[in-house]
Image: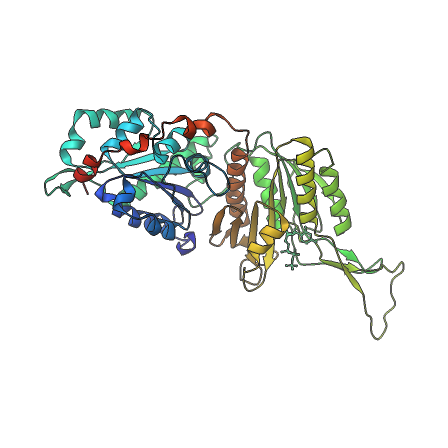
Length: 474
Ligand code: CTP
C-alpha cells in the first residue's frame, strides 16, 4: 500500500497505477513490480489476461494490491461498473508488464478481447509497455510492426533486455529490469502532468510533489465546500466552538478554483482568508450552515456537482441561549442538545432530489476528525451516505487543527482505504480532487464503451494462444 512509501523518496505518492499482466512466464515478476510501485507511493490495481492467470494466481496480486484483480473483460465489479472501463478512468497510467507477442498484436489492432486491451482502448492516460518473449518472437517483423504501431499510439515501450530466456536460449526478449519499468512509469506521469500544464507551470508538477494545480478538469463544475468551525451561543458574549481553522476546506476551494470549478464556500469561523473568486456564504451556527446547505438542495434537485463537507460542525449546542450576558456565579450548568447531522441530512436531500428530478447524483465527500484511531471511519462513510470520507487523526503531530499539513486516509465506498503520507493541505486537496474528477467522469451518462463487453464475441478471450505461453520469455 501507499502507506509503506518513504514520503521523502517516493515519486508516485498518491498516484493511481494499473498494472496489466499478460501470459508470459515473466508474469511472476509482476509481483515485484507491484511492490516497487507501491514503495514509490502508488495505489496499484491489477488487470490480467486469462493466460496470465495460468502463470500466477490472482490471490497473490489481490492481496498485495488490496484491490480485486480484473481478469474477465465481461465481468462487472461489485458496484455494477465495468471493470476495465473503471480501470481506464480511475488510473493515471497503465503499465503492461510483461506484454506478450500476442498481446502486442491484439493491442496494435485494437482487439479488445481481454481487460487490458479494453482498458487501454478506453483510456486517455499514458500507457507503458514492457514486452517479454522468446528472442525470435521479438525480432519477428510482425512483432516489430506491432511495437512500432504502439509507439505511434504514443505508448512508451520499455525494450526487453538480452540474456538467458525461459526457452533455455539466449537472445533479446527478457523483461526489462523492473526499476527501468518503474522509471518509465514515473516519467510517463510526469510528461502527462506537464503536458496538461499551462506554459511555465510544468516545473512545479513532478509526480509525488503535487503543488499548484495545472489542469482545468473541473471546468463547468459547481463545487460546494464547507470550511471552518461553527459556534453555538451560550449568551450574547460567549459561545461553544472548536479549534477548526478552515485551512483544509479553503485549500480545497483554492485548488478547485485553479482547476476551473465555480466554488461556493460555506464558511464558519476561519483563521485564513478565503480565495478570491469563490462565492462566500458566511455562517455562525450549525443552524445557519444547515440553512445554507438546504438552499443548495431544493426539492427539485441539488444545484451542485460536488459537495465537500470539511467544516467542523458543532455536535452540541445550548438548549437555550441566554438573552443577556450571564453573570459570573459559583457554578454554571449548561444543558446541551445535539445538532442535526448536516452531511447526512444533505445526502438524503440529494438522494430524494435526484430521484425526483432525474439529475445526476453529485459526488459527496465528508471528513472525519478522529483521535487515536481511524476505526470509526468506515462506519461514518456508510452512515453519512457519502462517496468519499477523508479521515485524519487530529491528535497526531502535523495533522491537528490549524496546521498547514495533514496526514489523511481516504475511504471510498468501492475501494480499499488509501493512506497518504504527511502532505501539505494543498497537496491533500489536489489528490482529493483528483479522486473527485475520476468519480465525476464515472457518473457521466453511459457512452459507447459501456456496451462493449456484450458486443465482443464471448469466445474471443480463449484465443490467447497456449503456444505463446510455452515459448514466452522471462
Ligand atoms: N458533520 C455534519 N454535521 C454535524 C457533525 C458533523 O455535517 N453535526 C459532518 C462534518 O462536516 C464531517 C463529517 O460530518 O464532514 C464527520 O464529522 P465528525 O465530527 O468526524 O463526525 P461526527 O458525525 O460529528 O461524529 P463524532 O463527533 O462522534 O466523531
